[in-house]
Length: 390
Image (cartoon, rainbow, N blue to C red; front, side, top):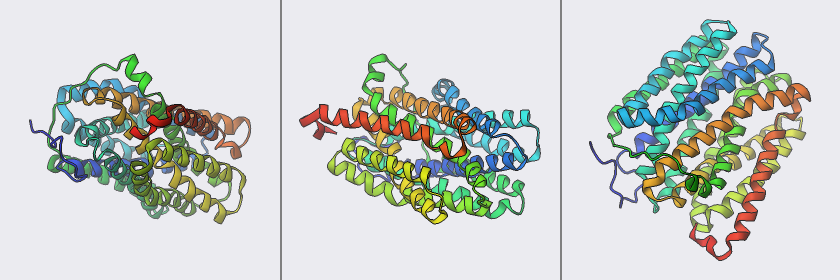
């Protein structure tokens, strides 16, 4: 089997990396196109908010539960075949969703979609840590996150254009885009044997801070893509307006991710991460309070610009804190924690919306990011002069 890149390579476009950016882009397409319009479709069928949140939770819980299984699959069939299997399952299962209005079948389809996403998500993030090294880790993670955000942003736009014509067209087009990932993997991604170690307690203790960031980010993004359309429908937004509001959120992430990760290399990951999380808190407060559509989109842009870098910076901390032989364990923990956040977000937030009101959709996200911010501040102060190593 071929080695993916030389450990000494500093280029963010070394062999294999462009294919991984493409995989991230297609992962973003699948999340940004399927999830919001699944929620929209269910809402238009008069499904209760709690069931919509539960359906989304099934998607993310199968990502979380699939993590250890995918680790075994990776060892047995390798990176390329694992990614191909994920793209194939997603591409074949997603178009089935608008063909039925039976709630139990929707849950079964969503479970298959969740495991499919887990296959290419875990394999892609694991490979990313093998493709990069300490000299280019931040920019590689930034480009990967940018690719994901670009796909995530295009998903709602594509969906909003075709959904008014037919939901089936939207889901079929998304399926074709996802299936194109098979060609990307076959052409651009060399195979590599990944040496997995079982995650250890001492590895987990080293990663508490980035894992906290992964959970908060996953919780928030899953809540936004799953329940924010329902919230906006309640505010009399049309389907097209919902798509544009998501696009504004993603545009903020697209414009901010690379500059923020560059600043992290220059001034330190923790300080920059702390600043972005502080802005996330302010933007969520704004989204909770404003009613005007224009002001809402301004705060959505700020939220996207500040929230999107949280993921690559947290993932970069994983690589900075662990030796190369422990990177797979760290990546599995990171992805599992992110998936756990994705799982908890829609369900818990939908319960809060049901008990209190829709305007409290951001309350749990806000609490998580405030706790994360306080932990970051404490860590930065504690590290003192040692901070410059990060």
